[in-house]
Length: 336
Ligand SMILES: O=C(O)CCC(=O)C(=O)O
Ligand SMILES: [Fe+2]
Image (cartoon, rainbow, N blue to C red; front, side):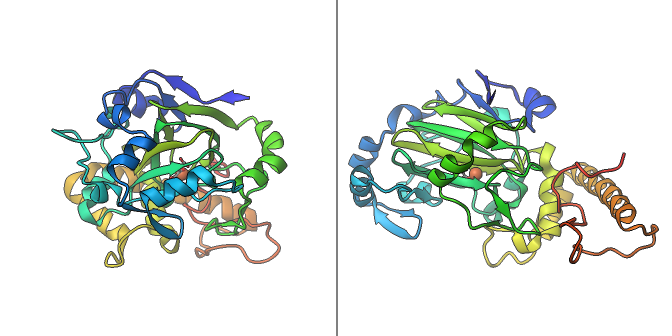
């Protein structure tokens, strides 16, 4: 079994040079956050009993959710997952005076900050009882994420982007996980088999620790105790290419933007062009290279020459070979 790596902390240079594609836990990165010392479920109940938070399909006052959580015997308990918590609780986020928490330095600049108010939903307060959690998924829009445990402990099991995770059925265009199994169902049926795969990594992230989810990685998460977490999705320089290709080539799968934002790819490319033209150019060149390689793979696969027009996805009988960069989110089928 491969354990998720653990470090006390990493510098941004170490992250950028070595670890942006690897899940890891930092054990000493969030101790200075005020919320790490202040927040417990009891404390939040005292301070915010009336504040309504989103728990799946319902908005409940926190006191109602706590009552549910403490009495529930549900196999898959309702999970509190709220992206407007900072506004609702009157919290300041980011470095400065009287703030609740901030982005750890290790992950470096978040390129989606260039979008300002037009960035997609990116931060969530997560609260749930033992057994609650998240079934297998990849995070939205090719983003990376961090997940900080404030109270409790979470078990994580993760796989690299190109792995076919046992018991996880993805639609042909990779757009959705079809009929996901509940966490207990997946654990009972597939956990033992999945843990044998060499690519599998697993581990526990405890209170006061923060975990890195690299762009495109599969993950399932279970709370081992009642707990509180904060999570944020971000775009590190190292994964700009994935995010741009997601926004451009999977526009129908892009999520979290306000309705007014009609062309997220263009918006992001324009902001990058203004602030970091070199980064944009580098990322676009990387996409072109990948595109070229995938096109050659495709041409070889179907026995056509270079002048074959681009197609989107192979029709019947082809075993689900998808064409176009972004489709596989990996380099597995590249030709050197
Ligand atoms: O349940 C959790 O803490 C994991 C959350 C997660 O993976 C997500 O928000 O994308
Ligand atoms: Fe996630």
